[in-house]
Amino acid sequence: EKKRQLYFLADGREAGNPYFTHLYRIGLDGKNLTLLTPEAGNHQVMLAPSGRYFVDTYSQPDKPGVTVLRGTDGKLISTLEKTDISRLTATGWKAPTPITVKAQDGQIDLYGLMFTPTNLDPNKKYPIINYIYPGPQGGGVGSWSFASARGDHQALAELGFVVVVIEGSCNPLRSKSYHDACYGNMAENTLSDQVTGMRQLAQKYPYIDLNRAGIWGHSGGGYATAAAMFRYPDFFKVGISESGNHENRNYEDDWAERYIGLMKTNADGTTSYDNQANAAFAKNLKGKLMLAHGLMDNNVPPYNTMLVVEALTKANKSYDLVVFPNAQHGYGAYSPYMMRRRWDYFVQNLADTQPPHDYEMKPHPDPRNAVQ
Figure 1 (cartoon, rainbow, N blue to C red):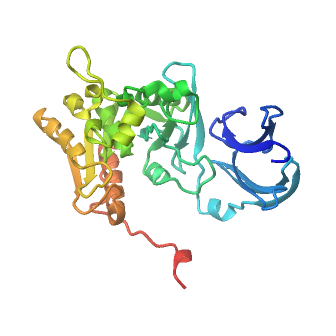
Figure 2: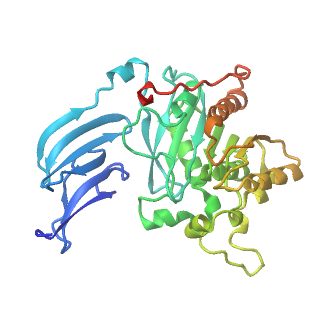
Figure 3: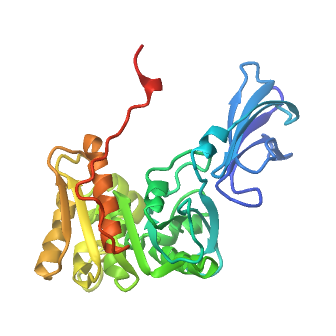
């Protein structure tokens, strides 16, 4: 307060990945903006009680963390730690590849991650699977800091796939126009950006087989997956839609109305929410689609998926359905079963290979979490 200065975290000011967070200082008069964490990466900062120093840990999805001590003027005092991942890499672990592609408009840069088999043969062709969470309150990548694992992306890649996560327009932490790209039309779901981005990746990496494209997601990603299968039926061949909010007139107003806007009635009697419902487009399905939902879901009511099931049945479309009678929005103890079914579905229908019958996933608890 004495110096009339403000310290704050912000994204998007520095060159490169706009999702990396940095620490800045500025005068309360709006002058003398100063970058205090210059290294490229996602910075996590902890201020000392005295206010004279801060500990800064920074990393990138493919670069492990470094922790340093700085004065609040930004001056480097000491390097405290550098993460040693030698034991991790010795297991055969492979970092994801950061990717950049152009959005559907051909102008905006989109950022994401790509996961490939550790024994990748660039002379072979691999099906591509898009993991999607379109937000618009958050994206599919999650943290842009280093992580040894991100869901089952690498595990799925090891089965013979290229797995991609692309932060499409409509998601936050960019410009308002970027975030507003889906406003009033949630069904866009960043899908045009996903398709355009995947096509660019296939041009850059010839081992990607774009004729075998799959997609999967959970919750908002489940909604986007079904929309992808119905709106891009010639592009996406296999989809797995988990716990999707397929009908936003039957979902929470504090999510749908916040990001789509209030329902408006058009001159022809339709509403602004009509064309966002997946059931209305289910008749377009051409590929293989698996739907999953927990019947005790206290976030997205399970009848969201039942509406799609009914529409597919009326349209005489074949589909697969996995139901968890006692699971909520996340599948809890049934998650390993869903993961196995997910792997099986892509292996069978996208890789045209027969997986082991009823392979049992046996999760092992981390011994470090055991109660002493």
